[in-house]
Amino acid sequence: MSASTSREGAWAAIWRHASLPIEPAAPVTSTRRPRIGRSPGDALVRSASSGNSIQNVEPSPGRLAHADPAAELPVIAVALDARLRAQSVRGERWIPAAEFFVSLFTTALEPDEMLVEVALPALPARTGTAFLEAARRHGDYAMLGAAAVVTLDAAGRCERARLVFLNAGEGPVDARQAAGQLAGQALTAEALAAAAGHAAEHEISPLGGVHASVDYQRHLARVLGRRALSLAADRARSAGH
Image (cartoon, rainbow, N blue to C red; front, side, top):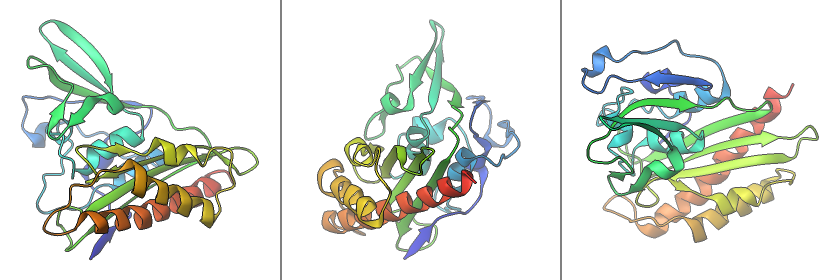
């Protein structure tokens, strides 16, 4: 089994407090790639670059508009509260990432719209991020993955948390109830395990498959969710020093 935590790659081209204009009609090699930054948001995007030999990991519009439930970038977009700009001959509109992914391979884009820009907001101080995924072999699609964002208050308690899963439903699964349990709490091992356990039992809807049963995907959600939250919390503590 392969677990990805910090591999870097092309997806780091999307950073916090910035927009990445995308040329939808251009080949991937001509897509503008800005300088990789060092913010917590950058770290999460870098972590989601799995070096996957099956997938094309360039930051093209298709990575998001394809809406593959096993893809990493949609989960990162939701976890970081990205906004996506759609454009057509009728004009343009911004769509929150949480509303962009509708179901399996289906987005909120209208038939005449194209995705042309992704914008990520600045992350607050004392914020840490983490991304973990598990695959049977290095380079395979993940059986399940988890992205976590944790912001601490001045006392070191959880001010806000985000926990989003991939391959745990028909699109990115935002475990809002589980993350909400952590607000105002000291992030003990018990609290993190309880939150991840709630998400695994009550908020995800894994489809199962030849590589992982539904029960095993729920097990992965408990383990990876807890570990991702713990790692994000550790990084938030380090960011506050």
